[in-house]
Image (cartoon, rainbow, N blue to C red):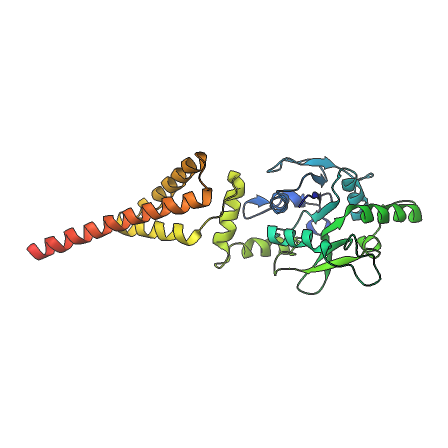
Length: 299
């Protein structure tokens, strides 16, 4: 699905005392980078805000004047895009995931609301958080109706500065996508930031969050069979020696990368290398157990 992405990263962050919110980290990664990771396949990604280092290349722009509010910022970003479908995100969503983005991008193709022309589908789709609140800065919009409504607002008010987003979205036919529990969680305050940092370390999700962060840091996109690798590490630690666990998983990754370089499917290469190493660790453990039993019997 072809789309462009606009990330709004130029807010004043007043509730954070004017801190550089997009640069604040959760799980060791800047909030802006976490949002950018949710839309890696955007044809063009435009960040509306001050330039800063990012994990992947983006285009930069600012509303004029800076600080003109979300509608003015959205207009500035829209001017740098050409796709018929535009993903719009705020830069403070630490738990936004690719599945949610995909659902937003697919939803505008649903049937139009009664009384609307069904041919082009809906004007877009907006995330609705678990409390039933609409999130216009976690949304996918068709560019043509979005440009039309922005032009009408500019003509009516003489400026886009300071206009609320509801003035823009009220006239659009938007589908609603129900949010996963944390996908719409944003960091507006220091308490929000602390809560996000605590949530990312919760027992039930810490491994998934860590693996996602490492893959992003290393610039790889690979489905990881966490259970298989953990089982391998356990077998190597118990059957050989504790330091064998990290060394074995490293060697499995190296072997899988080598196999992938010759044309093998990366995920299958990891699975095959893990299987071979796990079998070896079990044979090693069986041999040690047999030797121990023989020695005890002879004693």
